[in-house]
Amino acid sequence: MADKVIIMLLNTSLQATGTLGTPFFHAAVAAAMDLEVEIYFAAETAQLLKRGVAENLYAGKQRTKSIYEFMQDAHEAGVKFYACTAAMAEHGLNDDNVIPELDGKRGGAAFIGEAVEDGVVVLTY
Image 1 (cartoon, rainbow, N blue to C red):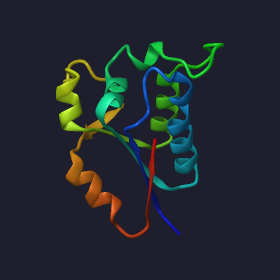
Image 2 (image 1 turned 90 degrees about the horizontal axis):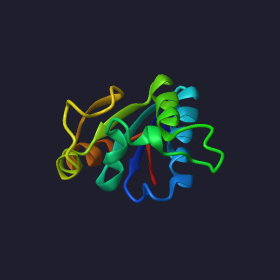
Image 3 (image 1 turned 135 degrees about the vertical axis):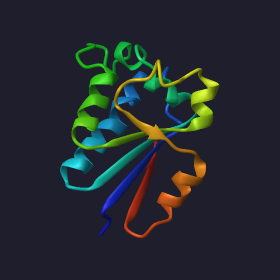
């Protein structure tokens, strides 16, 4: 059985807000099952790490819970957030404008290195 889950946010679009809550919900569930969980933000999804962006996106039409609240739930459950360094540069992200939940910056080599380890399950969204 796996003891770690890595989630790569790559193909999820910030325009398809109805899909944005699911990765964070899944991450929180995995953490609640005592699995180590990391989320890597790449390409367009790195913008979720900028203060003010995820706070203004909602998964449903009723706008009852922001994407940032989903992110906070996951992080509070123990999920670690890592940003792709190239995506940060592409979208003008820096230490001064990112959310406090960002745990670090990691590139593609770090992601692949983690993904090929025994006991790791990789999910992509």
